[in-house]
Length: 200
Image (cartoon, rainbow, N blue to C red; front, side, top):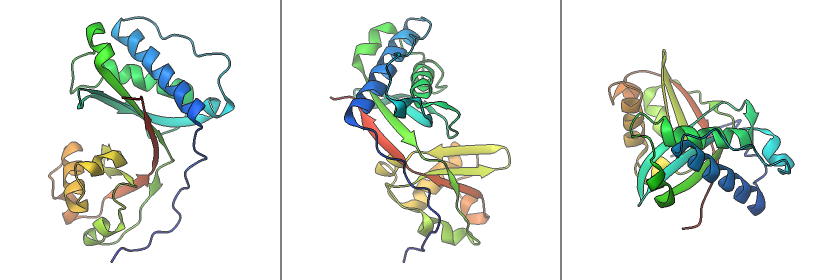
């Protein structure tokens, strides 16, 4: 039985196809600039108002179906268009798991953008309750333990559909033992995303 959750943070109005296309174009140009060690191209002056609102994003790069970089922020503090531009450049050059994207790779890289809701605390009193509170394929999850923190986007449920396995891998990403979530109550936040990508 799934426990009920209250106070879920609603997803803002979905972006229109034109707004999504504009963000993907910005991310693509930012990737090109970063791979070629160029300063970021200025944002278009005629951006839709929705893209000038403060927003948080993750940009994921893949090459031939394999992850090539993913960086984002959980905190919205700058216009969404600017945030996407910054995250695309960072995913190309600052993801410690991968070498910097080379100019020769750019044409083979596929871009996916995730627009985040504000993370909301998830209250629970016993470790065994936590998997039942998570919504696979819906919730992004942030785990925190002291100064350590890690997150998985909702898309990760595709590889880790079991909530217990999802949490164990997230603990490992945080730098902790995989069973940490089973042994004590951690700080947990959840969020949702609006996900869209370039045409394949």
